Image (cartoon, rainbow, N blue to C red; front, side):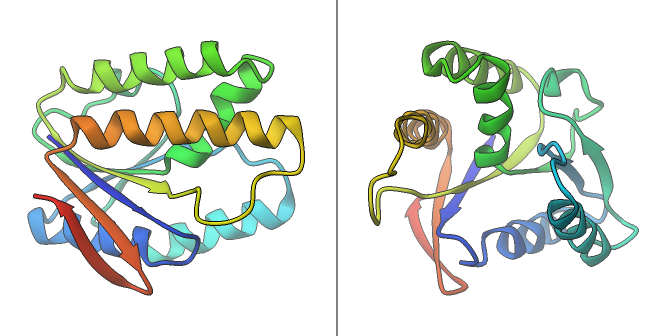
Length: 168
């Protein structure tokens, strides 16, 4: 089962997803999909880690997630944007290859008997990217978001910390 949580930066997506997971289980799983690329980002990741309590099992991965011990678990995947960034860089900005790799990962997760709460930044609510690379990434993320939202049993859009239920 997929629960898709989307919204703008600092809209409350992660807090909502984590709270929802804790309502569903006392032992949730958190999958961090980011690669650390600088000290500022390392500090942000550390802050997120510190905010989660000892009840969380955390994995740091962005490929072969279906091979992790997730059966029967409530799993928060945070987030599609960072996850896609890894594929985008791995495939040297080739959005066709990056999207295919991402879709394969999502399809493999569909074979795992678990509940996934998947977080993503929403886009398309502002300016277009100034660079070709930025525009390619926006296309990639838009298509990836649509792919996950279509597979999700629930879709929630976060605005100022408030959940708006789009699909339930």
